[in-house]
Length: 483
Image (cartoon, rainbow, N blue to C red):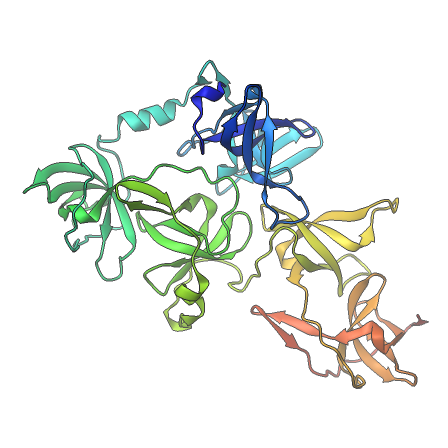
């Protein structure tokens, strides 16, 4: 790809070798006689520090190509060659579809020993950039562009909107047949935009007759047509392919009720799902990644990328629980995990139930799983720290540190530091010299431990840490050990 054809800020992809060919998304900054200077979108200066600056580097012109445009509703077949977004390497890697799963998911083979379950939005067809064009071409995209103003089959919620907007001068030119977005200021629909086609001009270019693409009349026999003030119309925003996960407080538009609704991210459940708070309503809902797009503002006839929400301005904590309507499965209080975050991971392996091990989040995988690296556990050859996949339900934030000055009491629940992890137990005896006999009911053992090896037990419940109270279970002691 010739650097003369690039302008500053253009989105490109850079080819690099990382156990195979990986394409990384980047932004073009400038070019020299033999090199191109880029800033990567997903790679940072320090892989261990998620807050470090995005990496910048000089690359060869022969290793770049334009960023691929997204394909709408692109379904894949078994055996088809694809490029999948590898979250461990944060780039696009070639593989092959081996199985089609439910909910637009696929099993993809990247090599003989690697199988991954991936979302549809994480996959794309394999294409080559040859002589200034994609091979094979984006035929589906071309058909969609050619038929923007033609009739299409749509699904409808049966909504009928009354658009009421204050008149405002606009220099945007809307021509007959142009695809646009129309906003609603009706109560309960503020902050929503609906795709429509310009029918004809009314008055002195101050109003237009539009035909919605997703809304129908009350009898559902035809697409809804309305007269709309020019101040309520804008062009359709440019498509921005969002490869990496959305960030906390990032502004987005969510596809809901046949339109785009303005909001921002308030929780990141995993790489595929987010809790979105609507900007103009006290409502929050869970959306998949493919149902969101980056929010852009139409200002002075230009599209501007929106900045993140200011926490103080939005006052996230002001919402009332009774006004929230949640649409999701699972626990609404599921914690947010990010790369580099220190957490605790529990084990359900035989003989290790009730134990928690400190680890660091390395990467987010789909199916509510994460790649973690333990801080105290090593591989079998003891050469490096152990890494493994862990379900989100097995991960929790590290509990706040509580300094216990006074002695623990009989039957008080504690966490005991033993075998490189924290084990849930119960004080069975208070001994001399700041020692205790601790009973572990998961392994049916009783061990003598010092005061410094214990911490008050806390439970992670509904997004809060709760200190446990004393209990009186039946004790069955079979074995004693002293550490």
